[in-house]
Image (cartoon, rainbow, N blue to C red; front, side, top):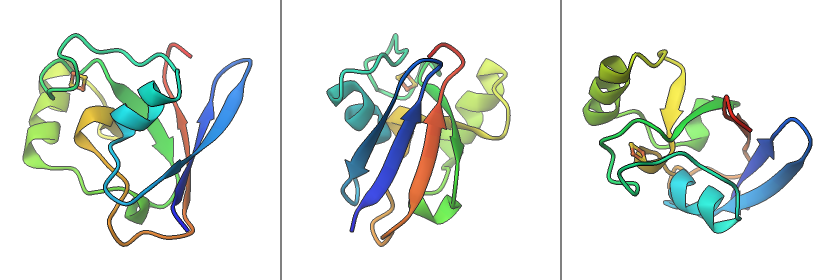
Length: 103
Ligand code: FES
């Protein structure tokens, strides 16, 4: 069973199924939800920051590029950049709650 992403906004929510390796950026935008980006998912703008709650094993780990970009953009250590993270290859039956500051 794939990872489930529960998108939570002020007045709506949705649940997406994330196949192993699927980028959060592609899943969220593909579902028609707005997601900030001025680099089209190239990992350089930091606008796609999310707040994610749930088991860390559900996502690929933070890499040095993401950590550096978060520091540069003044994002907190818990922020997840949607274009640089994906459903973990071996994650099953895990659910994450996902939101942003602007949903
Ligand atoms: S969309 Fe630009 S860093 Fe993710």
